[in-house]
Amino acid sequence: MDMNPFRTLVRTEGVRLYRDLPWRRTRDPYEIWLSEVMLQQTQVARVETRWVEWLDRFPSVFALAEAGTAEVLAAWQGMGYNRRALALKAAAEQIAFDCDGVFPTEVKELVALPGIGPATAQGIRAFAFDLPGVYLETNVRTVVLHHLFPDVPSVPDKELVPIVEATCPAGLDSFETSIDVDGGSLGAYAVPQDEDDTPRSWYYAMLDYGAYLKKTVPNPSRRAKAYTRQSKFEGSRRQKRAEIVRMLLAAGELGEGMDAPSVHAALCASERDAGRAPVERELVESILSDLEREGFCCENEGVWRIA
Image: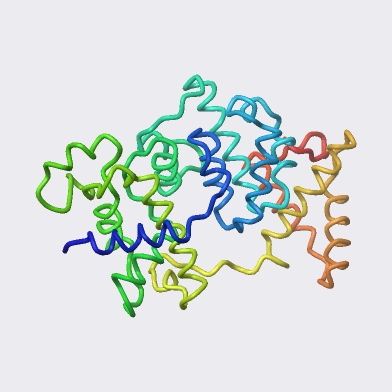
């Protein structure tokens, strides 16, 4: 199939719909990695503010690696999924101390870092290094499903991956080579249509066009087999975990910790204030145990503190 008409359409829409976001004004892999992680299940408008605030506090991968866990978690509050903050710090430590602050560029090396999956790895590769690859993210899925799988339900990623790969341009060094190529692909990737047709610009176009489609047509990404509706947060175990982390952070700012009965009483009070029933002590103990195992907090002589 000749994908050039599809590629031309996406590139045209990308120019029309381009969003001048702050992380698009840099090629620093640390700053781009941070934006990729923050944008997971967080609205773009919120990330625009929090991304700048985070970089003011942790301006480099070394600054993040050397920061304390409590400081990192405090800076992350309000972003949701505190595990992302711990993974950021753990990966920063590896990059800073094992790689001398130099980000790897290969997918295999990137996904070996805590919290970095294939999509985040390719986001770093495309936006920091202009390297081609499969960036299978929700807005990219939306574009592919809308144009190439109309009305097809439950499309598995294995059918999307070859298309995403074949439509990504081959990269900066391939434009002169592509002039002599007869056909629509250069290896696994597309022949660049011109010198501005790079992995970085291509995926920005896919993201912006996909975001537009989700606002103007019934969300095509819901027809992906990988699509899952986010579970309700309020009243969930996840919400209670986040509340306990906030309690321990607040206690830590006062130089104090909390014993399990105090955590239980405070969480029950918070639940009552929200119009929900008090929680069982066993649930609190289970959550504290999970948080300890995951590296959020530690217990010493019956007192819990952020690790």
